Image (cartoon, rainbow, N blue to C red):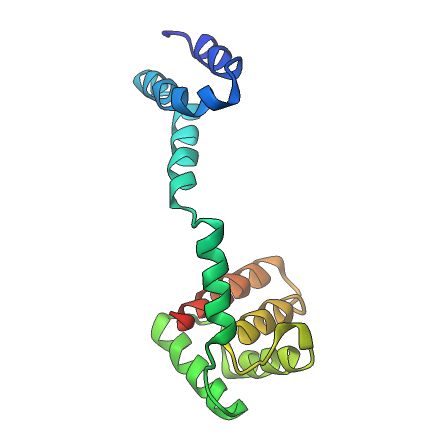
Length: 151
């Protein structure tokens, strides 16, 4: 398998159940040639195993829905702000958290805004009100980090 085209063609023509097993061999052959595609496929291969399973994701959501941050709005905002500050989540200002709490409170499908799940969803919905895509993306990433409060 000295030829990248030959290796990829052989891999693509295998039945699905054989492709996964042969992927490692293909990656090894391509890595020897130092190709960019090899690095991309290797990264994808590693990512596949780094991703949580569906049941792990479901358990995380269940934990976030059941984890109450605090009993009152002010205590929730204080706790999330303190958490954000300790993790360096600079987009999560007190005013952003308050607006996000209000969004979550007005949206019954999120459950209680006093839970981790409610706050995360309030934050991600609130991020859609920002004017710039990079700010929305950063706010969404930081909202995802708030999920850590559930564990």
